Image (cartoon, rainbow over the protein chains, first blue to last red):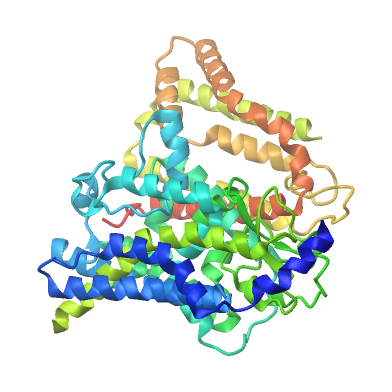
Amino acid sequence: MATEARVLRPQQIEARTIGRSILLSLPVALWSVLMFGHFWQPDRAAQIASVTTAVFMIALFFMMMRTGSTYRWRRWFFVALGLLFPVGFIHTVMVMRGTMGIPIEEMIAGRTPFCFLPIPLLILPAALTKTVVFPGSILPGGGMSGGGMAAMAGIWLAMTIVIGKGWCSYACFFGGIEEGMAAVPKRAKLKKIDTRWRYGPWAVLLAMVLLSLALFDSVYCMWLCPFKAVSEYVAARNTLGMVQNGIFVVLFAGLVIALPLLTKKRTQCAFFCPFGAFQSIFNKTSVFDVKIDRTRCSPCVLCKTACPTLSLTDESIVRGETLMSCMKCGACVDACPKDAAVWHIKGTDVAVKPERARLMFLYAAWGMAIMFGGGTIAGGLATILHVFV
Amino acid sequence: MNSRYISTFLGARFLGYLAFAAVAWELGALVSLPPAPRMLLFGAVHVSLACVLLWYAYSAGHGCAHACSGSELVTIGATKKRSVAGPAALGFLTGLSLCPPFVAAGVRAAGLGSVAAALLFFAVFFVGTSIWFVPFVGLGCVTRNEGVTTVARMAMVLIALYYGYLGLTMLFGRKVYGY
């Protein structure tokens, strides 16, 4: 069986023909047209943004099919998402509120925009007291809360069940900024990283869950979220408010800008993000994962070097698997010169048709990326285009 | 060993409860302290707890690293001898931590007819709140895992920083949130 599988592998990793790549991209093209095909809308800027986004997403998927590379093309989408989300979001809050600072009156009124980051912090208080410790709206109609917490939680759950921590590579609208920063330098200046920092997200998650439960407050959002620096911050009315905002800015500058530039890693995701730690648990429920085919591995540890979140160690390579923090970005698969790092569907042999596993994962992940991230990209793009069109 | 620390912690916490009950009843007026001194007391307790947590986080990383002995987190605060001073101090301090329900219970104790009634009231209050510590007795084995101890130490630092901050804002009479 294993021999048969090895015979099959080389032809699967070859670049596809243009025709075959187009054929494989057709479902994605159809989905993109369904999601962004509002060609009749009167807003010309939004029209152009929708068409551009659809073409962008289809083109990237086509290149994934054509070249067999995942990470390289996914990164374009992810960086675009990370850069355009703040553009659209800040524009919306400025139009609706006139400021990026959220005042206490808005929180009391339950009009705080909800993102997915506090989801793990809300579970215990909700389970124990039936109380949502976030000053937002559960259902639509909460002003800046947009679709409400229920919609966000629903989208998160649907994606998480299927792709597990792949959320952090195909849906998170924050991670793209640091991925972009990490891509800037040719080589890492800071190469030695104490691997114990990998436990950071779990520590932040534990501390935030306990504090949120004890204080009945979304403590992470109030004190530690680095992305407050590029979305909305506490409307500071005294020194302590300034301290809170100072923490946001310092964390953003350090974890999202400086450290990715120095290490070429997604440092905020790897060492800090509590949502990422929580999401790691769902890698156990997702059917997709990345494996190391031990029959092909040299081991050169290029995969370990390429991993942006330190999710591969010498021990895990020997075991033929990634750590549970793997966010399925595909960097290790692209980096492996022996094609030993492979996409895999749980319950199947590691060596059997990994390209088929990659295709199945990408259809699921890219479909959701178009739906969730694509809308955000189109929104940000439309905001910019409104200046010119 | 783990149950010994838990019981020491709970015993010291129980003593803290009884001490508070006796003081609350004897003085009666403790809960009617003017807001400023009461905030100072609250702040001092918060800062003390933060310091203890930071000490644990630090000492857990500077003890015996033998695989057989597990993490020093198991022997909270004791670097060489299996001292119970750490859990006892933490238990006593948490026993005096003036959270709102605790203060409410203190008000009730202050109004009771005798010191025995006040002590009994706090003894029952202690039993009720101690149930939440029972699951921790069986968790000693997980501390052999380096990841668990590292996560615990990092989380201790974060929580200590937050409580230290709360304590300092109380001591200096500032608002907690900057609205």
